[in-house]
Image (spheres, rainbow, N blue to C red):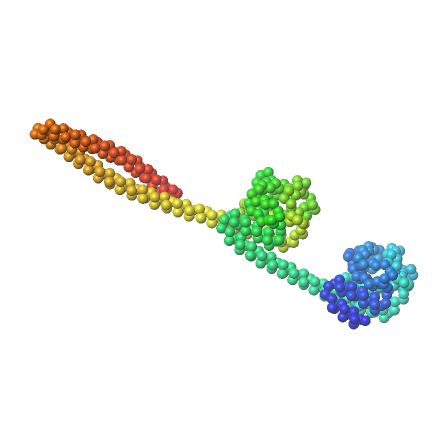
Amino acid sequence: MFANLIARIHDCSRVEDILQASVESVKQSLNCDRAVVYSLQSESLGQVVAESVAPEFPRSIATTIEDPCFMSRHIDSYRQGRVSAIDNIYEARITPCHIETLERLAVKANLVVPLLLPDGEIYGLLIMHQCSAPREWNQAEITLATQMALQIGWAVANAIRWAECQSLKLAIDCQKYYHDLLITATQKIHQGTTRLEVLEIATTQAQTLLGVDRAIVYGTSPSNLGRVFAEATLPALAPLQGTVIEDPSLSDRRLEEYRYGRVESIDNIHDTDGDPSSLESFAKIAIKASIVVPIMSDGQDLFGLLSVHQCFNYRQWQEVEIDWLRQIGIQTGLALVKAQLQEEVTAMKSSLKRAGVVKETISTADTQVQQVKESLTSSIQTLDESKHLMRLLSHEVVTLTEKLSSEDINLVRIITKKLQANAEVATHSTLSLQSEVTELETVVNSAIQLYKSRKAS
């Protein structure tokens, strides 16, 4: 029977399974009506965490027993290995409150041995009950129960260590998982070339990787208002991007706390001490649980808040999830600074490119003006020569009129008047063109000076 107990409990990896296998083996081995493991919760409080009992007697599993008069007198002695064997509870020297506790479970006789862990700490008590009648416990039964308790204590300690190792491994795996997610999300966020693109990537990553119903970024403004700059949400929810939401929590004091790294997580909006106006604001956009982290556009300036929402159910946020979103908020802030610098560089390049086009246009205009001036100068010279020739022609006409007939003289006069009229038109046009060229040259020179001054600044 002892070997069977060892085989059964060493096949179990969970404490609960070890304890249940133990009480079943102990009840069978000692042929008692009930066997329980009583876990000590405090100096005066304990709970039955495993039980094997005959069908005709009441069950005590999960029963919490507060027995200060018993615990205060005997707990230290049980830590030292004390064993209590009571053949008849009414003949034993036990307190009335102890008898009353045993009567509720129909106990007539009991055997109690401590469950000690290898480090000497007491885990609880292994208790055997005889309910049908009093029972005289012999030494062999007491020894067997003590040896069984020793093996159970070792098995429980091993299971606790195994559970701790598994929990630690799970925590490490969880940390690694979220670390990998953080690297992936960070790389994508920093690929954004504009601030809007950075915010859109950040909300998409938060909504997807945390598996939430909605993720938004909203800037803060007076009167507890926040404008939604970017959003990633399930299709079943109404979009919020571009809207102004009212958040009573955005007080000046709260915003100052966000500037210093405040993170706020709510598992259930109805379990918080928030004021009714906050609950009403949450209800308007169907929030049941949320996390809010700050986004700093530089070391001190609060750009806005990154918030994730559960809208269809409540959610108990894990510490690793909260920290992951906090890191995403930090990376978003860094990416915003980088994107802003990139936008400024792009704008500067565009401005320089436009300035180059303007410079080229001015240079071309200046060249064309110079060409017009050269043509105009040549035209003025030609016109001057024409005027000189006209004066000579007039002199010759006067000389010829003395020798020509009246008809020839009239023809010559007509030709002369026509030439004079054409010369006057040409002169007027040339003077007008000269004035326009002068004005154009003035405009071009002003443009060149303005360009040079802007370039210098």
